[in-house]
Length: 455
Ligand SMILES: [Zn+2]
Image 1 (tube, rainbow, N blue to C red):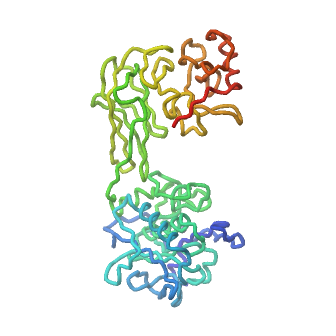
Image 2: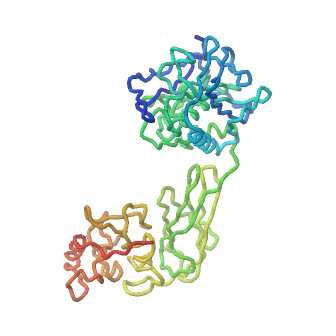
Image 3: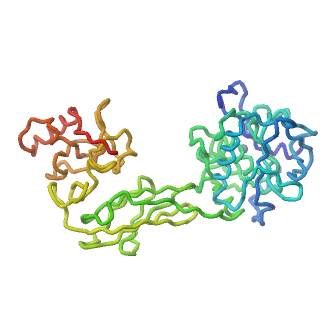
């Protein structure tokens, strides 16, 4: 066994994957790393900007010669003698998904992913996909992938993803991303969202995370390469290759509506997504940054009190983790605070003095829901087994906190506006106030809301 293989980090197969049981195969012990330089040397320009995903052909497999790692000559530091990795047995559709996943995974960086052999004249990193670990080296039994590793870039490195995950393209991609990045000098991270992880339980599609994550395979340990307590895989690859062609986030304002009448301290609800990740969403009023920022979804910001009555332009700026901006804007007219019965236009209703989308607006107050994400307020509640509705928070001690046909009843972290009238459910002739409101409110839960499903 060469020195390189002792330094190999191995991606063990994880339990039963893709319907094939690997449970009888013990996970490999903690990888042993030898001959580790202290600290990462400054990154020179990378040897290549291309990853070749080599789908081993079923007919002949992939022939690997022993020697110094060199993708151009199909030479690897891992086997002791010439070996053949048998062909990748999954379908074209699975392969296409693996390729898409790998391209998205590396999209933030200035490096390409191809499955067309660049040939002997073009430097490239290579991930060989197919066969079993034992075809490469008998000591690798149970591994899902393997890569040479030196805590630094290995030019033209050859890494491996084995055909042990069935049709699970996410698991194949996770492994291929991890093994290719090992050859850049990245080690295991204790972060289930990052492809450098061994942890189960995170999203099935891993992405290099722009966060400082603990190092470690089966527990948090100091990073072996740097001695630091954390590794930032995203930052590391950006530093090495530079950013890829940026893709802007997608952003839109869900409420208020363009040209709508709003009230002091009105709430702006924002939909923002990005292929890599949203860093923040900023609120700008009349071209000035208010300093109000939303960092986590559901993105929601309240206009500062200083935004007085009259017309204003509202702009939201979403930034992805690369700093790529995207914006959406609309005009609003700030009027006096609304009351339960008046001051709002269109489908809006008045909650705590502020006009918000009501039962006739998709995801508005009182509309049917099954999950929080269907509600603009991100709160969907109701009785067990009964109808659920989107609710807005209200103050129980404040008369007129909820619009007509709604009452402020105990719920959420205090009170919520719940539809109790207008549907013929209640025998009360007049609108309840005071203690009666409380009682009817509780009853309202049992009686179900007057439902309107958003279309
Ligand atoms: Zn690994």
